[in-house]
Image (tube, rainbow, N blue to C red; front, side, top):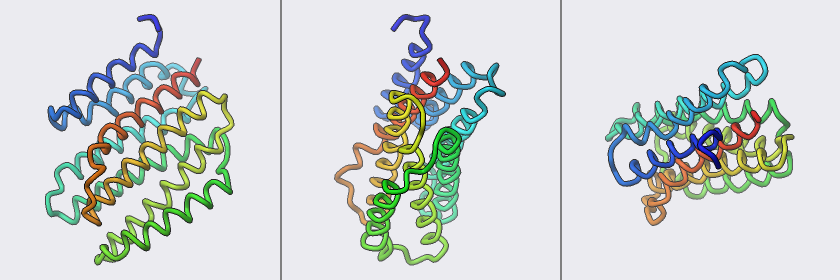
Length: 214
C-alpha cells in the first residue's frame, strides 16, 4: 500500500484508536469515527451525485460520535442514557440505508438473527428494564440493529466490499451487545472488547466504502 493509495489514510483512525484504547480521553474516542467520516467526505465530496448513499454512512459516523458523548457523560442520568441510545439508533439507520441502496435485506439471515436477539432481550435484558421508555428504546434499537446487519448481509456489491461492510456492522452490534450486558446484567468480563470492536467497525466500513469508490 503506497502513500498515494487512499487506504493509506486508514492509518489515521488506527493511530487514534490505539490512543483512545490507551485511555487518552474522549477526544480520541470521537476522533476515530470522526476521522473516518472526514476521510470519506474528502474522497467522495466531488462524487455526491454518483454515490449519495455514502453520505448516509458519514452521517452514521457523526451520530455515533454524538451517541458516544451522551453515553460517556451519562452518569446516573436516564435522559442522557436514552439520548445516547437514540443517537446510536440513527447511526444504524444510516448503515441500513446504505445497505438497502445496494441490495436488500436477507430474509432468512435476518429472521434467525432477530430470533436470537429477541431471546437475548427477553431473557437477559427485559428483567432488568423497569422503565417503559427505556425498554421501548432498547427494543427498537435491537430491531434496527438486526435489520441493518440483515441488510448488510444482503448487499449486492463485490465480495470484498460486501464482507468488509458486513464485518463492520457486525462489530458494531457485537460492541453494543457487550455494552448491554454490562449495563443491564452487570456482566463485565468482555468489557475489554467494547472499544476495539467499536473502532474496528468504523475502519472496516470505511475500507469497504473506499474500495467501493474505486
